[in-house]
Length: 321
Image (cartoon, rainbow, N blue to C red; front, side, top):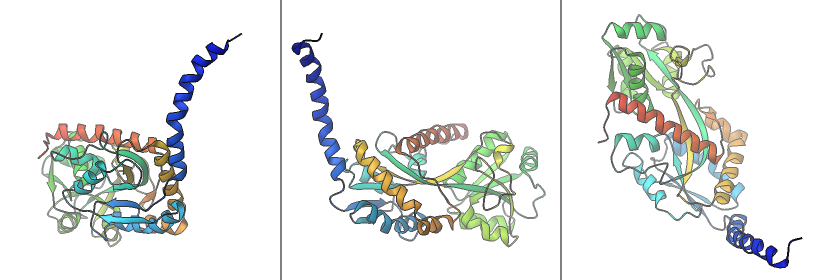
């Protein structure tokens, strides 16, 4: 039978753990007690800003405190990323992120490392891209485009960002002679595709779909893992090139070392805001899916994207500027 002394030996470390955990639990229970600043590292009026402001009223309602949207654009979003990475890890400063929080580190020097210098909170959305051709381009399927490129003279246009990585990946995955033509933005690339100056393009749904419906460009395939809206009849590139999945997303991150209970509190408030029918509709009207995740699930997506885009840049011989 255990003695009082032997029980005391076990009680001491248990008491120490309780003493450490109790303040964290109390902090999470009380959080938030003041306004939260949501850093959006893009200019007002853009897609990220629109989603943040659509969510803001419900988020404030769920958290019981004001949520202040602070647009801090510049340096490929790194001004906002750096601000949050250096903020106090108390949940009162959070960051709106898109995949450039990952790709920045591969394209530019001195960028915030999303794995080491930020903490995942939630992935809010997912978004497929679309492979397009000029209507007069003879190839009408992914295999036909690959065959044409192997004969030479086929270019793949992008406005940069993930579509740019998509063109480079398409080139390396097919071992075909694609020339990647990168524009400063989607609009000029799409204009040149319609004009016949380029043959193939990877673009966003929301900019491409009006031109698809007008017959000015031809939709070929989606970059999602499986077929779906708004063009369910289209195949996905992965049907021809297994594993070729290129998806955008919108998410939220926090300073590193933000306590897990506070991260969970923000995650649940974000989920509740995204579940509101009016908020969800404003997002899905732009052909973006609402796909809320746990913090751990978002952390896995970030690590998978780092591995994927690192491989693409290495295959393409891209060095950070």
